[in-house]
Image (cartoon, rainbow, N blue to C red):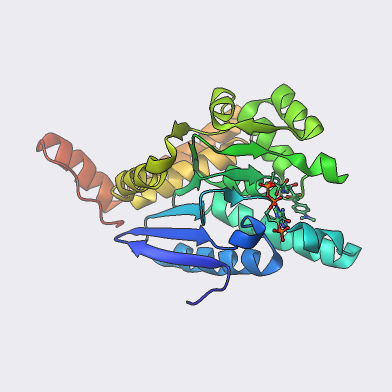
Amino acid sequence: MTFENIKVARENAIIIVTINRPKALNALNRRTISELSQVMTEVASDESIRCVVLTGVGEKAFVAGADINELAEQTPVSGSLHAQRGQALLDRIERLGKPVIAAINGYALGGGCELAMACTIRLAADSAKLGQPEINLGIIPGYAGSQRLPRLVGKGRALELLLTGAHIDAEEAYRIGLVNRVIPDAELMTEALALAAVLATKAPTAVRAIIAAVNDGLEMPLAQAAVHEASLFGLVVSTEDMREGTRAFLEKRKPVFKGA
Ligand code: DAK
């Protein structure tokens, strides 16, 4: 596949997707959303891909938001279409069934912060800045940021970030639970790829089931979520990978999971 606004590279079972619009600080325009959607569709259907690392080109920005030039000229019809496509992309990332690691290498603002929140795990470079500044444009988040943010950091902190539009640094984002780890700038991609390599060795069906259990379960009452977990458990115990995992433990060796 060839793309204009993203770069895609492969390292064994890992796909590295780099958003590549440096002149606009990697802002998400329609084309970028469409290209990301295409690559995620491909990743979803390719069993040999086990993990994705998502980052932005350069040292300044992960994604500085939705493209404000496009936002400024939206009509109700185009705005609604844009909302549907962008939300579908973020839902697909969240429920890809394979871990997507956001390597946040600079500004992750507005739609950029929303994109990072849809990822499975967020690693932030120590110079990263995160926030939801939509309020300063007279709008509100459009990619479910007002919903994912309180689920990650709690209602009070989410409301403060959404209402002030403030940018917070990586350490503060870590303190409130918005990112999983803060990593020195120069080591961000090395760490992201090291984590991806670990995740890529895990049993794919169990990985998919964990991502589904957590995401679906957060939308359900606890008792119903526990029943859902039990059904997913029933699925994973029927896999060859479960037999391999338990056998490897008993034989005191590392398991080799095949996704069967
Ligand atoms: N869109 C388009 N261009 C952008 C951009 C953006 N979000 N962010 C930066 N740029 C461009 C700048 O215009 C500038 O272009 P030139 O002037 O060089 O042509 C270039 O990138 C470099 O930016 P700056 O010169 O501003 O760089 P600074 O270091 O001075 O400042 C900054 C960096 C990140 C603090 C600043 O660029 C900034 O504040 N950017 C905007 C951040 C922002 O407000 N982002 C949130 C956008 S609102 C929806 C779905 C989602 C959304 C809305 C609706 N629906 C489903 C309907 C989401 C909305 C948003 O994300």
